[in-house]
Length: 136
Image (cartoon, rainbow, N blue to C red; front, side, top):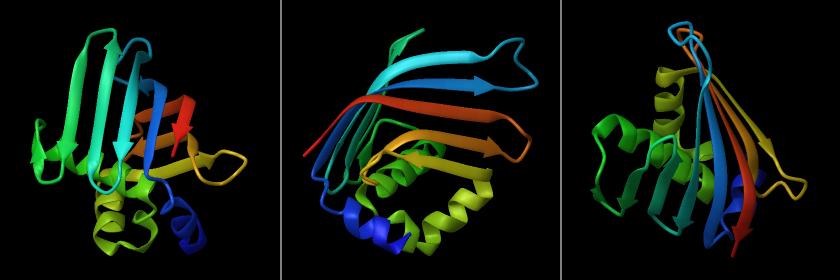
């Protein structure tokens, strides 16, 4: 993981489309959302849902338009993109508190996540597929 962090630190910005699928015992069928994410080093992230409804979550330094729980999740994603999550005990602890398991599949270069699976403590699962990834 430390090597991955060193590779990812060269990413200055990242943009990608995503398809997010949520499965839960409380849902009769999977909930599918699509959107676009933007990351700019060191601490800007926008997570914009396009369908089924439009919603934008944004963090810019210490400023944010989301509640504290969503903010924690976005900061975890942002740290992963920046390559800091592997060495940050606070982020590892938060991840273990929120999820039973986190699985990340990287692209062939090992620099960019293409598939993320988040398995919650209750068994609910969120998968995120990234496409049209552009990095600088």
